[in-house]
Image 1 (cartoon, rainbow, N blue to C red):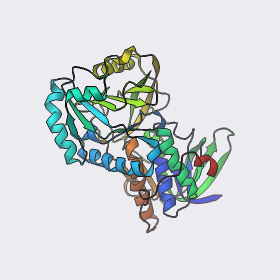
Image 2 (cartoon, rainbow, N blue to C red):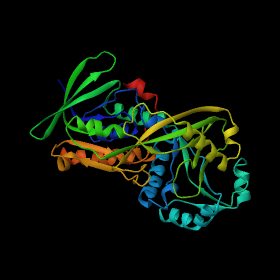
Image 3 (cartoon, rainbow, N blue to C red):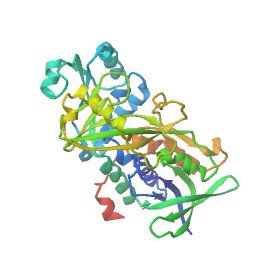
Image 4 (cartoon, one colour):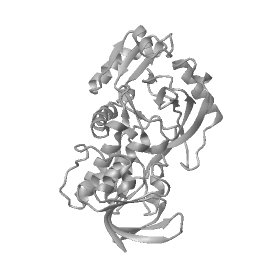
Length: 388
């Protein structure tokens, strides 16, 4: 039976960042993903690099965290990011009234925010709503979600980590209240194997409760389904957002030659097999037209739905749950030492999520090595296939 210090479960951005962080600390790491890498939540978001401005009014800690991580990612993953900035548009009474507080909240969170004359905003982005009342420029950006995660995977493998996709964890072994290893099954062949380890990181996102259940542990997670719609044509170069408190259908993100409006949010019981609802698509196209009047007239490209792993349980649709990052040490909450679950966060905060859970794993394993993932430029994404 093969042995590793740590098993990471989940092949999205958080799992990738965690595997990289732990391997930099000198730990032997193996990561399992039941599908293709980034095939879950990571590969299905609209690709906005959040400055944090969206959360400045309601969730200032997340806002500050996003801005700090944006600065780091622009340094360690430069060619995965488009430096296109963002425009927040006040198009109604609510947005107009919120503008001064919005700018003040951004600055309080260390987010550069500058109001620009509406005429200037229309010069920067000629397709935006000509009835815009106020406009604020912020340092939002666009990321290639797949390539960013793959850069973390490549960097992890370069440091000795092992990555196994199409391999599902089907059991977690323990003895006397401590994890001992995992049982896995290869999806393509059905072959089952065991791996021994000292610690396990559950980075399965909206599936985290299902993974925890393998060890008879409870994880409070709300899978929240978000639908996005893409149309042909790069209608803007900047990320365009509606200036209001966060809601549905208030962000348009340019991705290559597409424009994406996102997103809706609804609570779901099962994060697998999600499909967009017809009313969601209609709502999103209508909402997009309020920001860019001819959005819905563009050729329709696609619509898809992704599940977000919100930390906590909700009887509503999940908007009231904070995007704060949550690390659960099951040795303290469920009497199973060595199992850790990471929840919440954003795609923008994948690196710090890996750091926070790795800090706790390192402490548990008596490894006195700090996080160093903010110090080094990540390997190019295509090195993953060269190295693995």
